[in-house]
Amino acid sequence: MVRPAVDDPRIPRVHARRLPEPTRRELAARGAQIARVAGRQFTPLVFRQARHLRHGPLPIDVLARPLRRTFEELGGTYMKFGQLVASSPGIFGEAFAEEFRSCLDTGPAVPFPIVRDVVETDLGIALDEAFATFDPVPLGKASIAVVHRATLHDGRAVAVKVLRPAVEHGVAVDLALLQPLLELVARQTGDQGAGTLLQLFGGFRVQIGEELDLRNEARALAAFRLLLDEIALPRLVVPEPFPELSGPNVLTMELLDGVAIDDLAGAARFGVDPAPLVEDVVRAFFLTSVRWGAFHGDVHAGNMLLLRDGRLGIIDWGIVGRLDPDSHHFFVRLLQAALGDETAWDDIAAHLTRTYGPTMQHGLGLSDEELGQFVRSLIEPVLLRPFGEVSLGALIQAPQIQAAKAQGIEAGNRSLVALVGRFRAQRRLRRLADQSGGTTSDFDRATYLLGKQLMYFERYGKLFLAEVPLLHDRGFFEALVASASGSGAADQDPAPEAVRPLE
View 1: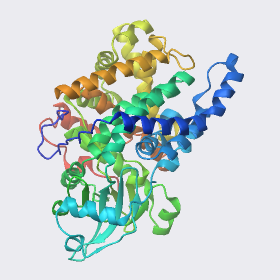
View 2: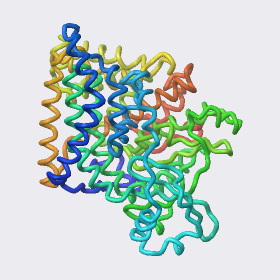
View 3: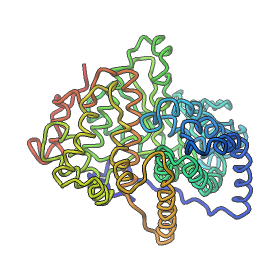
View 4: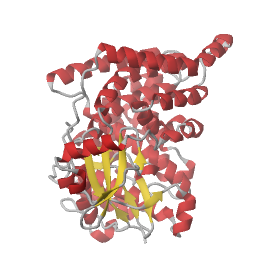
């Protein structure tokens, strides 16, 4: 478990559900299904590549549709991973990400008798004893859970999230087989984006283990409702959980009635301008990340609900990022550098060298000082120029791409086989760590979630805040980093007026 950057008992702890070990029969059956589906979708491309072999490997863009169709037909864990791709245009390109948009909120319904059985088994009481009404038709159907509308006996409307039955068995099998599929895509394309799919998968397997125990989400809801009260952003809402009606497989929470933030027609019906609400979400992300080293790790459009009263509800708290002290320090120094602290760039460069190894610096032939300036040239424009002119995905990818280039792993060639080999080695390390009760690199987890969330913000920023830089309010960010850096307002939170929401 990651030791949080700020030792605050209000930050919720998590415990990932231990997945069962798939049997050979399960792996064989699912593997055969994957082979049939992927073969049907990709065979035309294989022949196309054979006919045009002299032109080099296929660009990853041509794989978007067959890969998305493969994920949708396989369902479950594959759809969950497709959601990540759909919300990451900064890394994969707008066209590639758009192809996966259909993965964002879809899945088959669960027969109501099974839902009833899961709820009653988890809560230990009859359904009509727990709820006055329970709609048998699901309100939402996601890849690993369904959500039903219900009312409590006191009349309050609630949403009841129910894990799909035996979902952990399906996830365990899919995780064991998804990586080889991504490795195949990487080998066939040699594209940097295909390598990025593999990098995202490393964080994804950690994330989904936490989501499979809904008690983690219940604790996160309670904790972030308290934190939100402290940071003076009244236009944001976190649903109230009901612990007495929740368990490992069931979560009962306040029902928020609204439309997704990118539903422009719905926003027009409500007469609400989404732009200031998106700014508040970005502020909340930076506030909780800098002050407490914790943040919602999955704020995509489907998890931001524009409410009828003009507020914004933030839902689906199954993924919470926790910054270890090293990554928290790096994040704060990144903000300080963008705000004008010249000494911070060298610290950032040193951190990246520790993370990616000295190969990047040596391969580029740069001194320590030159490396700091090089990193600055990559990062500073992304933080200070308007959303419409920058790519937050580039901010995350740039050090990885430079490190890859220094090792001869460039986009457009087949040396990504080396990257595949490294991920196989990491998989072996994970197995050893699981057997010994330990863990692998915590920093990779934190960086993965930070990068993923910044990529989500890029999409909303371009949609609603195209003329606004990420760090446009210097007063807000200066007060915020001062509270975490030991200077000025060193040992206390910034004054409430210093971290005010935009009027």
